[in-house]
Length: 330
Image 1: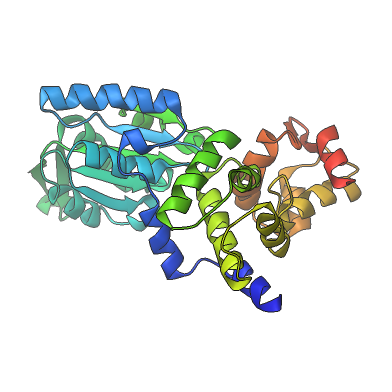
Image 2 (image 1 turned 30 degrees about the horizontal axis):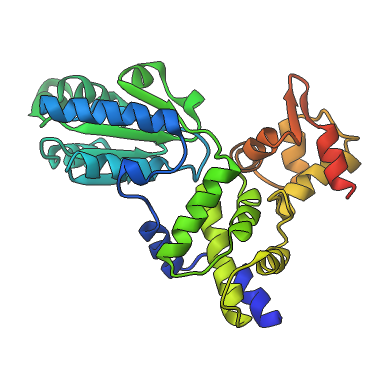
């Protein structure tokens, strides 16, 4: 059992990350969930291909793990285009960004993850590149300063953000297509788990798919990760098939309960209950008590707790709901 527990609790290895990539859908027809988004993108992509033009610049927002990066790859596949991937924090110099832009061919897709974290200088270069496919770069200073103009080939910028409120208005307004990804229903997650199991050559019962889906926090990335941990557990325990018992045992080893809450989630809820009488409490005080960053609470913990109805965010701070108190008392 100790061997099983160690295997299940291990963080994702490089092999896991490669497997995660292989589980991503390649076409819109393979994408599960987000029906309005899929329908709208299908129309926009079909129209762009008929006109022989790149897709308009597209922005995806929403919590981590819902498929923003997968959608960028799908768009590139649907448009038969090459994709270049980077992230906001990785582009810290304008010169590096100019190199990326000038290497793009006509119709290429540039995907910038966490685009709200672009530096102000880089963002200023992005405006004319998005609007007119041109950039102006100033070299030298004072009387020796001169402007170098670069003409870019038409491309599609796809931005992804977990904090759309941090995007500047000028940047947000330059995107022609904007979609916010919502948490997935359990039925959609069960379909994703079943499909991933087939790709992994894993035999899993329908009830086990639903059991994993309920623990996946409405997030496909988490669903696939839990499926891989159940696969590890079943293999070490010499089980040929993942059933509800395997799911229950593997989740117990990971300390994930029936609602998908892990140790940190429960610790946050217990702190609110025992030290702040259920709240309300300010985010700074809560972060200090938990010894966590406020960004961790706002980006990782809160979205699902709010969606699950366990937490309420008010003008006075965070407070527990009656559902949370009932869940903690079980």
